[in-house]
Structures are given as structure tokens and as C-alpha cells.
Amino acid sequence: MPADEEPYRATASATLIVLGDDLDPSVVSSALGLFPNQSWSADEQIRYRDGEGNDRHHESLAEYAGWKRYVPDEMNRESLEKQLEFWLGLLEARAEGVSRLLAMGWSIAVDCYLSTVTTELLELPAERQKRFGALGVDVDIHFFADSPIREDRT
Image 1 (cartoon, rainbow, N blue to C red):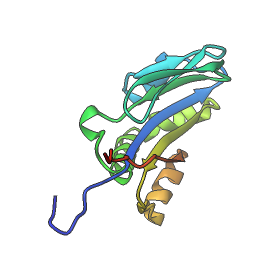
Image 2: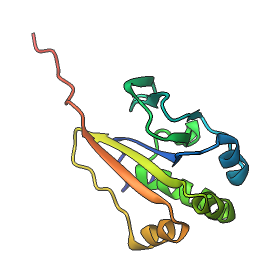
Image 3: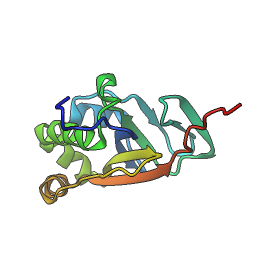
């Protein structure tokens, strides 16, 4: 890390998600050349990975069928901006497959989670936004406030 760059103090994740009423996970995998970390059918119990990487589930049922892929493990501690750039490079290289999935009426998004106890800057330059827009891929960002770590004072 360069001397003038501060460590990333937030918990962040950017997950590729494809949703559709009649989504077939094998079609998504074939179009993108990737296998999902998770896929589900409509009316199945919703599972998710929390900010600490633990698998969880909601009590509610999925409204749509879905396909989900996480960033590689070695990127888990990277900034949200770096994770978004990872997805852009991967999706731009597979733009034809992305177009095929969108033509089927399915939605594609990079679903982002950002949690911090400090003030953090999230930069989404116009050029990056244009690149996602040109692909037809949405970027959804969920912000969460962490509780500060309390010190035991005895």
C-alpha cells in the first residue's frame, strides 16, 4: 500500500446477481462462463452472506429466481471501488452474454454492501457509471452503520 494511502476501514462486498421470473441458472452460467456461488428458484427461502461472510437466511420466500456470484476470496478485503472495477472488467469481457441475458428479460445488478463506523468516501466516477450503463447492469448500494467497538473500562 502506498505511504499516502490509508487502509480501507469499511466492510464492503460487491456481488453479481441475475434475477428473473423464469430464470434458469444453467443459462446464466453458460452465457457468462461462470458458475454461481448460489442460485435459487422463485418461492424458495432467501439465503445471503452477511458482512462477515457467514451464510444466513430470511424467513421470507424469494419473489424471483436468481443466480449469485461473489468476488474471489482474495478480494474480500478490497475497497468497494476495487470490487466494482473487478466486475466491470469481467462483465465487459462477457458483454455478449450479458446482452443475451438482458434480452431474456432478466435483470443484472452488482449488489453492494458497505458498512463502517467511520466516515468513508465512496467514489463512483462518471466513467465507471457509463461503463456499467453501457452494459445494462445496475449497481445497487446498501449502506449500513456498524456499532463502534466498545472498550472495557474497569
